[in-house]
Length: 266
Image 1: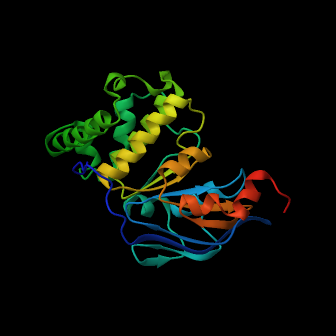
Image 2: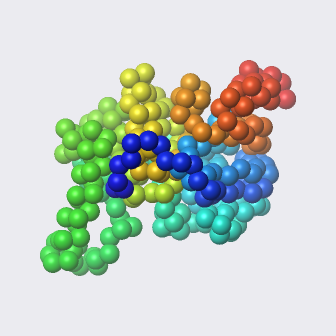
């Protein structure tokens, strides 16, 4: 992991830009002509009512969905879409709304899977656990142990994740994403289903990831208190269209956003 810093890094230039993105499934429009950007080192929130298209947008960013129109620019390189492998190789990691862990594997082994793209030795050396393959695995395990220490889950490192409470499983999923050492971290409702204490812990870890590692974070979250407290900028979607974009103060004072959350008829 990167060297620890004491304060949040200064927000930099645009690292990710989405321009006129449209996505449809048959006749159903999930996203319509949406544009926004993400700056390096910032926490960028995507909010909106249920069915607004938030998860679809994350799926476009990391290559799960391919938009019918628009361009995605990553570090200035524009393209129509990217596949999930390209996204991961480009430094984009992700957690999911529904936990996607290997329930029978330990916490340590689950987080180790986040190192897969960094493994260079061939399958035979890995299987024999010999020579360069052994040395490489030990090096990856040291990096994983750093993640485990950072997330304060040393006491459950050998526990199968299926035995863990929901809040700790969400923390393990965050650890797996961090093990990939991402430059951009996509978090899909990282605090969904958590109690107040678990939310406070997750907020602290998200802020620490941003401050200590300088990781750019794009997150979807329904808890407006959390969003307004930790985000640098917020984009608001409603029925697949963008209805707001700006600082938390600008977004919370937007009449369109207020209408969307109060259920005013369209």
